[in-house]
Image 1 (cartoon, rainbow, N blue to C red):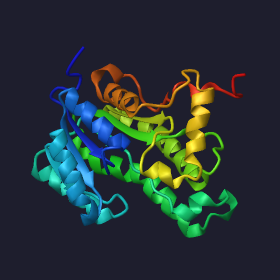
Image 2 (cartoon, helix red, strand yellow):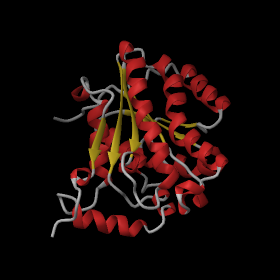
Image 3 (cartoon, rainbow, N blue to C red):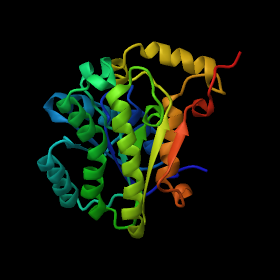
Image 4 (cartoon, rainbow, N blue to C red):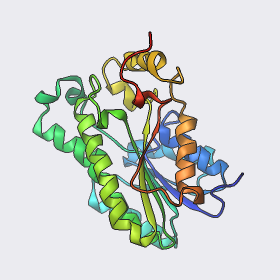
Amino acid sequence: MANLLQDKTVLILGVANKWSIAHAIAAAARREGARVLLTYQGERQRLTVEELGAELGADKVLACDVSKDEELAGLAQALQADGVTLDAVVHSIAFANREDLSRPFVETSRSGYALAQDVSAYSLVAVARTCRPFMTRGGSITTLSYLGAVRVVQNYNVMGVAKAALEAAVKYLANDLGPAGIRVNAISAGPIKTASARGVKDFGKILEGMLAMAPLRRNTDPAEVADTAVFLASDLGRGVTGNVLYVDGGFQVMALAAP
């Protein structure tokens, strides 16, 4: 089956570079025939995302810092001006201060906790509220999570707590938006070498653990995550909402390393 997203418009937030999961999702969406819209955060990112958008064949690159209500309002104005109807939204955004990631969770600062929650979890709520009026045919909202939301992962700290809030938000949003035919899900991806992952201390050891313990005995390929995002955005995923789908080679089922 080809062109799973033909005649669909997909808004993707979080493309930062060509190694990001959001970039892989954008490439997969284009492969399946979607019209793709990208966003960037601040002028510092603008040129990079515009160049990536041109390479991907994106239709538009729009400004949106999800931590600022005025920029979310600006995104809505841009979508309205273009007469856009959205069929899918991908939220691939998270942030925490490096110092709050590198120290024990109990030492997390109040401001660092608030920042991680705002950017990594609340932004999904804000994005969903902003995009809902443009999803008149229903559709799909997908966010990216990680196993640290439900289990303690060494050095993930405040981000794990933020991802837990994100996964709870997915469930409540699924209930709120379901009557409008909008499905909300999360993909819990295995660890992938992205720019943000470098902020997690000893990230290489996490990758080594995946190789040793995951049932598939390999690390996660961004393309696998992207294909799952395509499934959720397509009509094939029409009955799936309020779920966290694991794309981690089965790592989440393991308790102890194989001998």
